[in-house]
Image: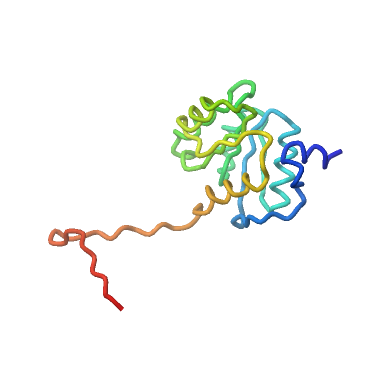
Length: 171
């Protein structure tokens, strides 16, 4: 029964327990925000099989509170939910100092281009349509979390006489 459910959400070619070809960064924490317990279960099982720590919220309001408390590395956000919908939660989280750096991937049953455009405009980094392709989801997660926790190089300050030229020695 559970395998049928997972196949429904992630396609027939992949079950949540099948080995993936995408390597996720160690120590990831992902917040899943969805009002469907079935979807929460399926995403949680898939991510835990990849070694990801998960936390869940059943609506946008809980998602905002959980994101501010846990500070996950990434958020998977549904759109249609009670109290505060995914668009509202995405907009709020992306504009706050303490959560604005967290990438949000919207996962929705809607295939409307306007939903995708609106979600990205409100601060989401990506958009996937349900049923979700497991490998595509893992690739998106890997992409958006690859640099989390990696120290960025500090730009070199240039003096007044230096016009930004860089010397390269031929070898």
